[in-house]
Length: 102
Image (cartoon, rainbow, N blue to C red):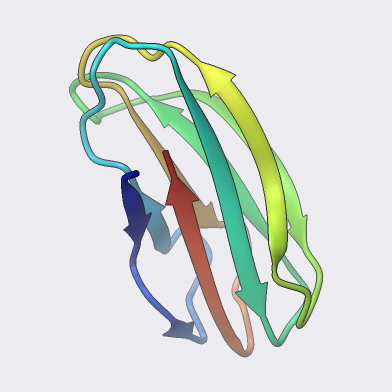
């Protein structure tokens, strides 16, 4: 199992990286997105292109304070070297940790 996280972050700004899988193989896989925060906030789940220069798809997700749970579980086959990441969709006043499990 691969586990990707930037660890606990305090007061991240809008757009700050919270988790990044790095380049992925072009193989079908299941992903779970976990989050824990002491502040309600929104994050963006993003599929990036293989050069990591463009967002291909973005989905906004709500993080409920102090409720660690899977935000999303998805199955997909990324293109070679595409990556899945989570960014803060707004400034967070508090602490948040997001993990992507594959």
